[in-house]
Image (cartoon, rainbow, N blue to C red):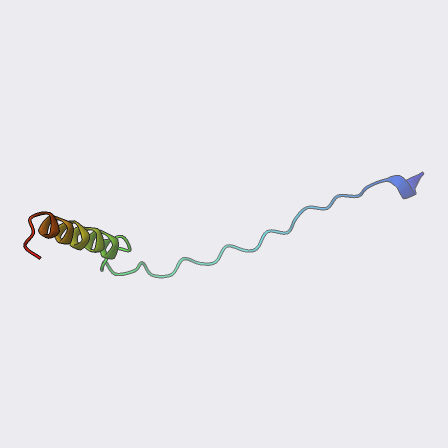
Length: 52
């Protein structure tokens, strides 16, 4: 009967890594995407105005 018993064990958690120093404020990750969209909008506007 003891052969049919499923034994569970706790999943061992990894110890938390100490947090390193905070990153210095710099360029946010989303800024290049905003610049890319802004350039695309400007180019679209110039095409619609038939300047380019």
